[in-house]
Image: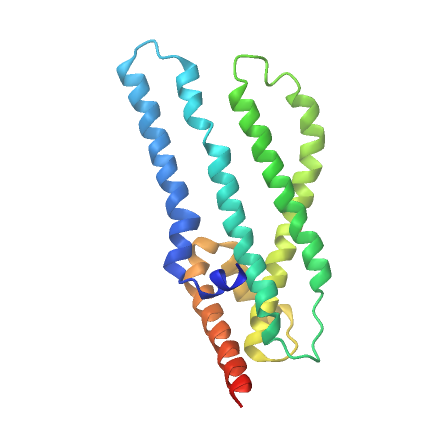
Length: 205
């Protein structure tokens, strides 16, 4: 699975990560406006039915987005010089926290949409007290993951220890991934191909 992300072209990742969610949004808006135009007394249930697909789309997007991060951070460790030790275990722990949180949150949102009109929001106030700190901590974990991924890319590229000043550009490109993916992924492709070439040459000798 890691190799799939490392070999993928920037436009392929862009379509999966942004193209599909955008198409779903257009489809949702089209259905909503069609519902209001066709029926003057439209049933809110019909409108909310459209939103029930939203958590599923978001879970798929999350899996692709985090899968991309994981593939770079773990897959490019082969390109890191042996004398440089990166905190891979720490990354793995902090990586899975927001991933699990987002999936469970989307499932919760799906239940809310399914339970509309049946007092599904009755306990939402209590849930907020749990979700808010988890949400903030998940944001921290995501930023750390971006930090680690950016550092991995630059370390593999320069073959030396790097400071934040060396990979700040990669960090912000990962943050604004809808632009950064066009710059980051070609670098990832080159690093992946370079390591494969070295491995193939070593095995053939």
